[in-house]
Image (tube, rainbow, N blue to C red; front, top):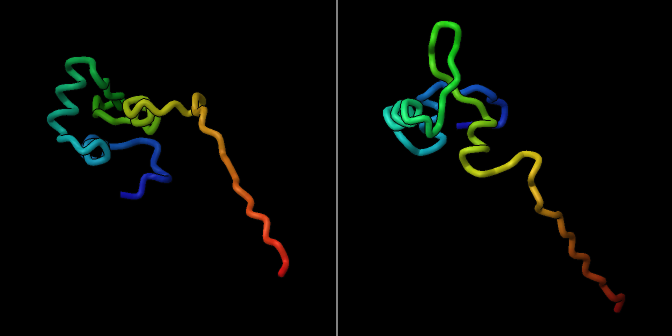
Length: 76
């Protein structure tokens, strides 16, 4: 599944992303473990931010740094 442009997920898409079943998502919603958003017609949907939060990945709290190694080449 290409997730680069998706911001909202249907339950089956989100379940696939988390490698769980839709039934598990429904149970987590009932138990307030991972609460789904609702459309005006009461359909469940999930967001990319929920995915990041569930995986423990903070968008702004990313403390990783980019390190670049340069190798000097001596002329022969």
